[in-house]
Image (cartoon, rainbow, N blue to C red):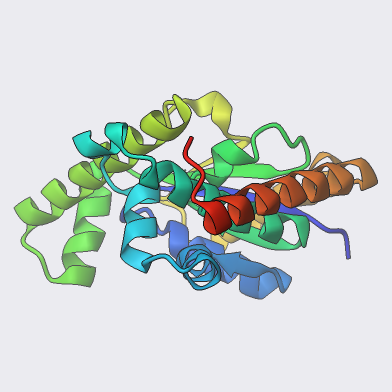
Length: 220
């Protein structure tokens, strides 16, 4: 079986998590979303909530005057790069699409749907009112977009960031998975020896940087 790496970015209520997990099941790939945070927290001794907030939540004013967020992100990036270097993995959120954007063999996928469609799904899954669900969807979009902009100076809605964009308004999870599988079948998204070497080097460099920060508390 050819080896591949998929980086996904998905909006709340777009079924991104469901698509990623089903894709992992069908292909026998590892799927990692909150698993990335759990791994980073366990390895580097930081709180799960802190790591989750600095990779997905809205940036806080005090973060601009603290080194903690940058240290936390360094830990998360080290885990993402290590997982990517293992191949046959689907990495969801946490800036993985941007972090891996210069690696030509990585398939970058965006999953989205209209606000009203996503709100209806969130309303049903969380038991919210329609108004609260719409607010939740839009607030999530604002927070995640602001976080990506803060960390990487990139607009997460910028379509050239992605190789494949899925609108799940009318797509089922199964059909979306099929489309991603077809894209992975393109030889341009298969891991090459050069791609493996590059990822391995980036992973080692990231592990070293993270270990140094953990050991010495060096400031940026």
